[in-house]
Amino acid sequence: MNLPNKLTVFRMLLIPVFMVVLAFNPDWGTWSVLGTQLPVSHFVAAIILLLHR
Image 1 (cartoon, rainbow, N blue to C red):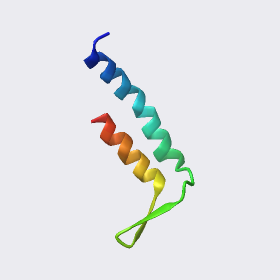
Image 2 (cartoon, rainbow, N blue to C red):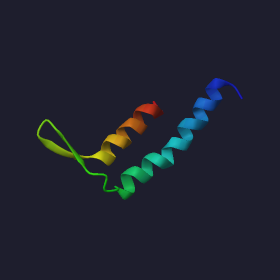
Image 3 (cartoon, helix red, strand yellow):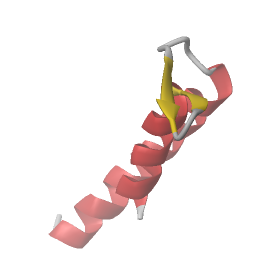
């Protein structure tokens, strides 16, 4: 299996992880960004999304 195929499989495996993080919204706390409280799970989902690209 070559590198492009490995990356494709890895990205496909990230999709369920991304969905679980957003769907179940675990209570990992919040971060304050520019005066706004944002859930840590949203940051985790954003990182997964960036890895998926």
